[in-house]
Image (tube, rainbow, N blue to C red; front, side, top):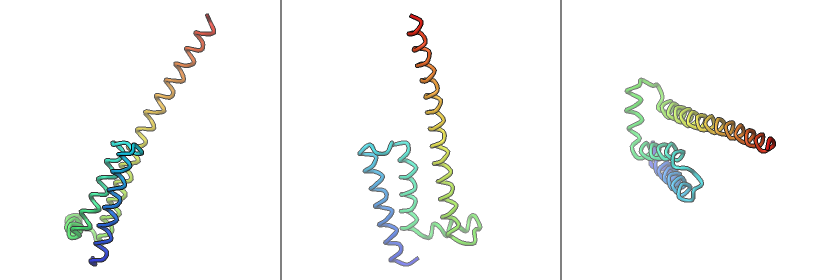
Length: 113
């Protein structure tokens, strides 16, 4: 990996990390959602500083191309974040259903009086 590419990756991953931290501080992003993105930013930073780690893991998993490890990591991260978001949506839908039922019961009780 060329030095220019490594410097570019370090700068981009550092800026991404700073952006995520600022988003959390301004309450634009919740802490539990930000953790996944912070881990991703730190992972990219470590891989850009130490690119030999990618070759090391490539040797362990017997992959033909190092880019396949990056793609696999990205896919794993996307699947993990999707699962977390779907569980949150499911919980919110259940809470919404319960609230609608409670409102309907209260309206019915008010009409009976």
